[in-house]
Length: 244
Image 1 (cartoon, one colour):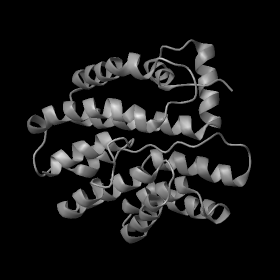
Image 2 (tube, rainbow, N blue to C red):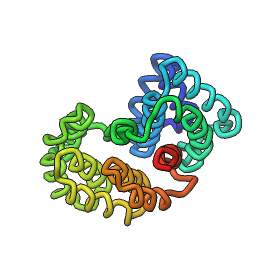
Image 3 (tube, one colour):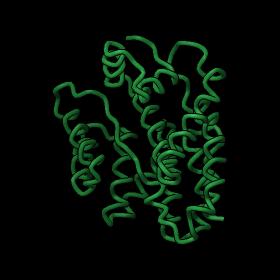
């Protein structure tokens, strides 16, 4: 399998890959969870900026931020650059852009979940067994925001792999949208206590839940747990600005 870095992700999203390159990249996405997770984080950041800025400003702001960091952070080919380093670089600039637009576009009554809760579930390719089929179906419903259909599928999957931090994370997020908040927060806290790539995304989503409930003290406490080099740092910084 070819090795990809974050510049390849930008090229893929921009439509700058040749058809053969795009096909190879999509095959790699199906086989490499880390690459798929990085793409999901990129799209998440883009969605956050899209919610805050007009379409033209969003596009220009995101593009300018990424291009400014391209030479510094995407100079070498190799394995996917660690999400921590990548999103620290673009996250700081993105947070500044978001902060500049804050007063103009939002009031204290902002719908935090609507602004920051746009999460996409990405899974590896289906290999034909039942467990993978469960994940594929769960992802389909999750990305359609049909959260009540997601939970039983992930319940079934976790019976086959109870250690899956990915399944716990997405089940936790889905539960907070279906009125099963205690169970959802319990899943998210389990993920935070682990050491997976979803650790700080779980912390952010817990903070987001409390922000939506107008419990700013608890929300800020969870945001403080997210280090500046975490993939979720940009969103955490923007949400913290909203709450203050």
